[in-house]
Length: 247
Image 1 (cartoon, rainbow, N blue to C red):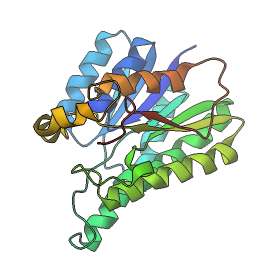
Image 2: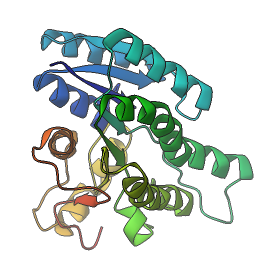
Image 3: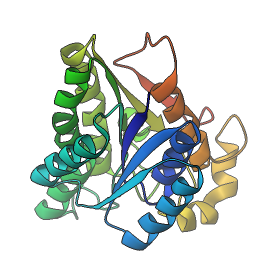
């Protein structure tokens, strides 16, 4: 039986690594992003794995567009087995500097997007009798974060909201749909590579495994949540940070 997945923010970084990992296990993958050139490259790599791929240029904060994407995937493939809410944006400004529209946009992309896509795919998963959802939170949801450009209060608030949403949805959608979250630590993606490279030695000293993470480190956890059988895990937040205590 075919398995299908939707990956938001799938053009590059953790989303790209996760989409490729899923494709490597036989999932047909639908990518959602606002980076058409990067998305096209990732789609080509997915096709090379011998599976099907769909691409959707979409703002994940757009509720109506999320419904359109889910309907298109369901129409093309007849099912949606896994949703990875990965799309996000950083926000470096603190409480005294951030504008209202910047705060609203940070919440919309990081948190409201999860509502948009869960509400869109949940009816399909319930109809077919099962499905799994994973949403990308952050260790900053747990620590409050202050030391990196992406971890100021608005970003931390949005990522903490994902944890509450995950626990509530696990109760509401179980036992049919398993819903979990992932909390990455310092992960060297295109979005933050310059900042990490400038402080990499400092970061390594504060991580028990002695290195910063790569997108593939998170993708392996995504793959576990998508494929592990039996599945007796829901409502959980899996920390993927190499045991980060002082970053």
